Image (cartoon, rainbow, N blue to C red; front, top):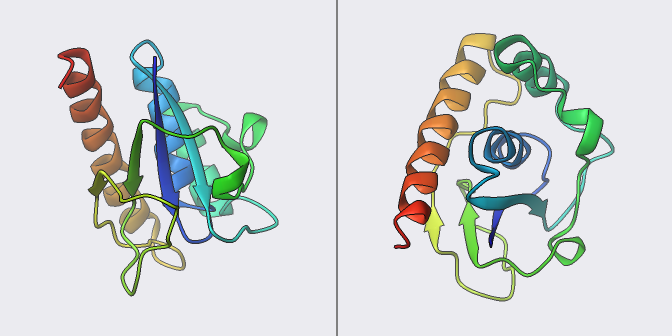
Length: 132
């Protein structure tokens, strides 16, 4: 089974959401991991709250902020969108989703980003199912 890594600088918000949604929607197609080049002491609490509200997913139950070196080598590496510069992970990214960081913004902004991530996860799942 393919391993997909969702990479952000801090591994506390967008990449954690992608890991959770990957596990939720595509665990039969690929394994989902998230990581960063730095870590935070905890996952973004607004993201945690809103993911529980929308999907009933408790990201803090099985997830924590990790470094790229803490996860298995991925078959597919996706940058969540780094605005300034993406972290170097030892290989090129397969895709850059170019997502805005919702940290410090309204719940509505979080929900927009979460729905974008969901759409991208579902598309990635379909692509992987077809073996592309």
